[in-house]
Length: 154
Length: 280
Image (cartoon, rainbow over all chains, first blue to last red; front, side):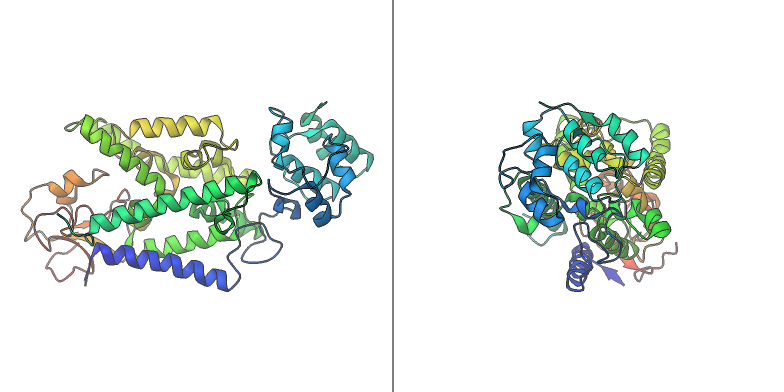
């Protein structure tokens, strides 16, 4: 049985489109981290991985139950409005300091005592690290990691 | 003038559509990350729709039931769907859909104009033959390092990620350098990344050995003009094969009688021998 190239690519596109459609309808098509939905368990890490660059501190506070003042203090932004501070905005506030969305995810994960991948390159401001240490919840491994990922910010 | 439903027009259409779609996804994600969530329909990470993410997560999935950091369930599903298409037709994903293969091909068109006789023939055959297996080394390294670290280690070297995220601060310098080298090399060699380094192409290439619908050449009607060899972007000697099973074939179908082969029904895609007397 012969088949034309046009038919081949049509079948391939149908396989992909139908597969994605079926996965979406059956709830398996998860494009963000989830906790138990779909085939796997997201990325194996905690809920903080769902924080996006566009997430505001007010949203994070509401979503994860962390006081907004703690978030603002940790990132050296006391007095700012949590509704106007976004995770991605941190990279503009602290250029060249590797403080951004990843930092907020790390802070939230450690604050909530979630499992966190300690191989990233994100940094935390010293105020955030002090706050976490004061809570007495960090493991030795996390303390050692943070020693290398703390930056002094003004 | 070729009709709009000719295989080449359709292939270019699919390539351009896939390239635009991935560009849109990447740019939408960037907009969302910067607080401008205006294209939320496409607001997914490139990692979430990359089928290679599923491949590098296989070890993690088998051992812990989870996925590698940044990889999502959707990557796993994409991997299975592309594998399904590869079992039927081989590495067609590379030849028609992969946007990084497409951009190399488009740069290569410029290379063909600059070096009309030498394009795609710069590498000595002996060296080329050895280098063709390099992508399996890359695949092994990537899968091993990902399994050990449970992170997308390849992102820092991935020219595909660099191409579609060049405007973000997520791209490592190494990835930019590899992207630059690949695009520059595309002026001399057709699809250099696909030939020598792509770990995903290496995986899909394995399906060429077993896929159901094969590219076949009818020796009885073949006039040995060698045009099929000329037009093959991967330098496969189609004219010396009865069935194209090369792990390098990207399933672009340029060699077929529906495309470049001048004799009808001589190089074709078929289940079984396609009604000819050819044996494998």
